[in-house]
Length: 187
Image (tube, rainbow, N blue to C red; front, side, top):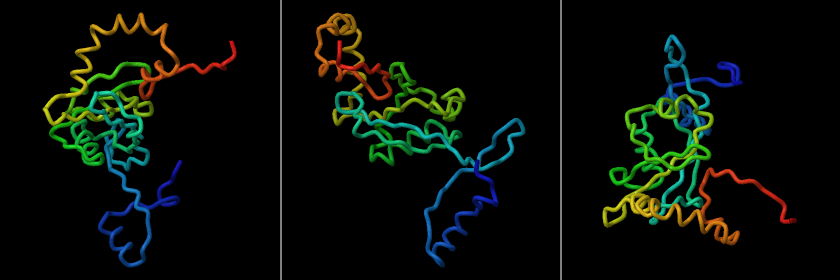
């Protein structure tokens, strides 16, 4: 519920840099100007979506220890999102691709590179799910491709073996964003 001219002032970046040079200060809270609403009038995007991003490991599985959250403008194209994430996470952009997962669903490869984040998420920017950044191996193999090839034949076998797994073994099957029910250990 911020109010312009009461809680904050919008200034050009050049002015900000001059003020910091003269007086010190910070932190800079950079925001994009986007066109929103029916009239498509320009306004500052004060609350861009906070998106969870997870890095895929060499086996294609998400590495929760390498998960981070980023503010990403709802009007950034998916191609811009990929470029920004690859840069921030020190991955080669030309050898990286994105996957997306809504809560309770499976990971799916992102194909709509020219869509904006808002279009891709179909307007559900508050519940953006998670993105997975996958990078090709040195042998030019996509780790998740190898993972997907093994899933089809393993699905029925995995489903039948779940009942006999220990709690520790079951934990390995959870991914970022999965919902679980907590129960007390008392039976």
